[in-house]
Length: 132
Picture 1 (cartoon, rainbow, N blue to C red):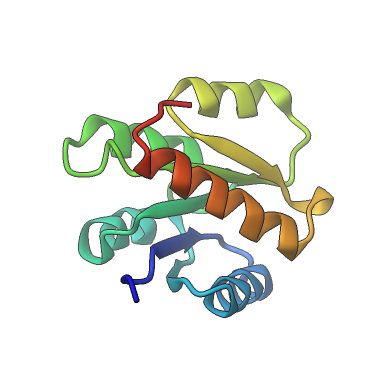
Picture 2 (spheres, rainbow, N blue to C red):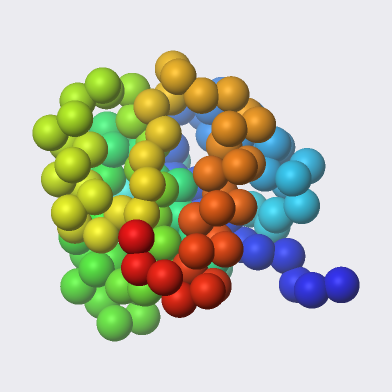
């Protein structure tokens, strides 16, 4: 059996963070959570996730700042990021995608099954070396 893929969930809504971690664990992933952007950046370095689910709107440091910092750092720039957002704010989503996020989920519009499908897709694309 291959090692479980590691997913870091950076999300400031505790209930959603717990639900996402639980669903990913049940889907066979090893997960950790972070409640804000600065904790998320620390955990990206220590946990070394295979994928980051990143909320855009958070206290201390928002998702855009985290994404920019990840892409500036040679250790973290190749970690795929899927944006989580409440916004149907396509400008911010397209900005995140242009900064290097691989995909996005609008929180109100997806089921947990959709989440698992998206995570699998992005991980497999990343492992096969595709960009976007």
